[in-house]
Length: 99
Image (cartoon, rainbow, N blue to C red; front, side, top):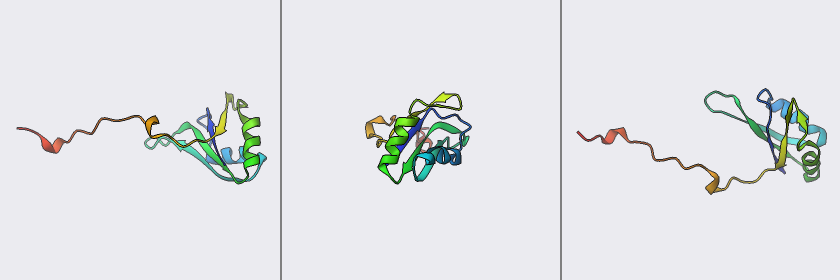
C-alpha cells in the first residue's frame, strides 16, 4: 500500500522518511519529491509498505503528528487524475518565423 506524506520539512531526506515510517512495518520504498532544477524537496513524498495493516496504522498514528515542527498530512496515495494536471499552452515554435 502506498501512502502520501505531505507537509514535510524541506530538510527531510529519503533515508529519514523511510526510517520514520519503518517503525510501523516493513517499508519497501520511500520517495521524496524534489524540484528537477534546484534538487530541493517539494515538501511531500510517498512511502510504500509491504503490509496494508502496517500502512493503515502509520496513517492513523502519523497523520497530523508534529514532525520537526510541522503537522504531517498522511493518507493513502491516489493516482493523479488527468484533469488534475495544469494545462500548459503549446510552446512557441521559433523556426516558423514570418519575414
